[in-house]
Length: 194
Image 1 (tube, rainbow, N blue to C red):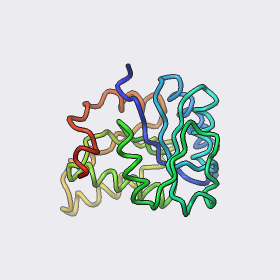
Image 2 (cartoon, helix red, strand yellow):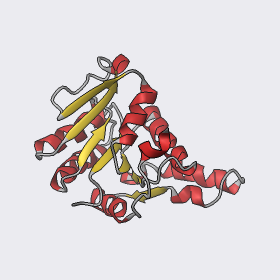
Image 3 (cartoon, helix red, strand yellow):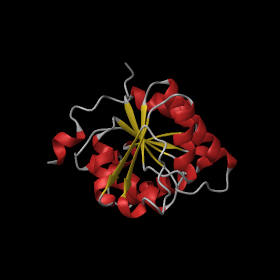
Image 4 (tube, rainbow, N blue to C red):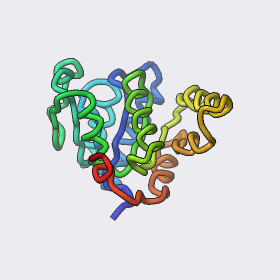
């Protein structure tokens, strides 16, 4: 059995301008299927979300989407998934995604992706979970975020442990390897949520 049974993937509802980002999403989806790791994501059929889900499904994998009712139409919910869960709001979406996974991987995206990533990082910092969080740093996409974290540390708003929250790699195989090699969480997210 793989160290990671289910992976939460945060990514954009748009495809962006870089072919390398779209290629990384396809590669990640296929790699999850090959490793028998269930994909859990935001449930959209469009953008990077749709690319990673379609690649996972095409390779024979399982893809679970969790989408708030108010975004069901706006993000064009992916109805061809293994499972599609419609929830009440964004808070429930993030919580339900976190409860179902062993680790998190972050592909390029914008504010929604940053919101989800920062909330998971904050939850880890305050002890709500111990899951590894990986940034797929394709063409250095996440370097500005890492510079901001370093900036906060330099100004005394955190210790070096903040930087250690993120595993970073520019390749899909490298990032999955780091996530799989991370220490196993001592407790499940939902056990600490209540």
